[in-house]
Amino acid sequence: MSAHDAMDCSRMLDELQDVLRGEATPETADAVRKHLDACTPCLKYVAFEGRFLELLKSCGGKRIPEDVRERLLKCIRSGG
Amino acid sequence: MTDATAAYETEVLPHLDVLYRVARRMTGNAADAEDLVQETLLKALRGWDGFRPGSNARAWLLTILRNAFINGYRRRKREPIAMDIDTADRHSILREVAESDPEGTFFTKLVDETVLKAVEALPEEFREALVLSDLEGMAYAEIAQVLDVPVGTVKSRLFRARRLLQRALHDHAVEQGYLKGEAAR
Image (cartoon, rainbow over all chains, first blue to last red; front, side, top):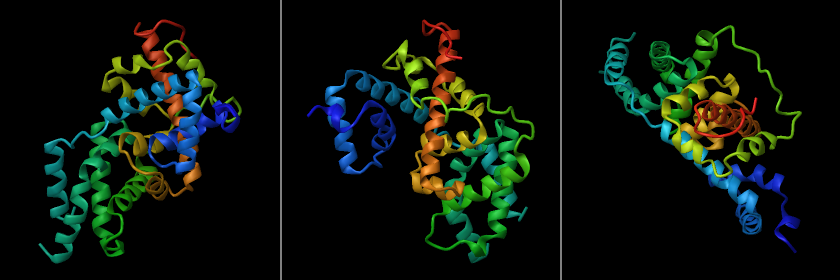
């Protein structure tokens, strides 16, 4: 049985986001892995999606500007 | 400082950064983001009695922030969504965008400012799901709690948000000459 019998490309793309974030069931993750072993176009999509998600992640995580933090603290400590 | 105020600060202050980042993406500018976070903090202080110790303070605060945003800061005249992804093949945009650069190397050439601008241009319900998930790294269940929708709805909004953003970034890359090809729209 080929990988495509168990999971087609469209279904793989549906499941991929759960797999990439570690929220897929082990069975689904396994089916996606098997599909990718045998499907080059989908493997490229995974790289595409992975780079995209890396890019988004790299845009997060910035700290609040120090002056803003201080103004907010002052505000809550004076009760608004 | 009273015990209640001290407890409030212990629970709330560790989340200032995430509150500010989300507010910044939702309002699209620094001044409104600061106002929105301030309003959120004051509402949380007033509603502190309603916070269950040991429950998820981040989700609680983001819910307050989101409600404050919806009630006061949301831009009234937002462009209507010109496309309906539901009726199209849900994967066609990805295929179209990935066609000219199947492994997405153009993503590595984009600067944060470009990406964040494109995020801020997303329709609101898609943007909030994407910000909480892909910029903040929150799990489906927590996002569902903040947005007050089922996990399935979070997933479908996230899916659409990503496709729209990929298309916007792809088109930007083509316009800037990072990528050969034609803009997808």
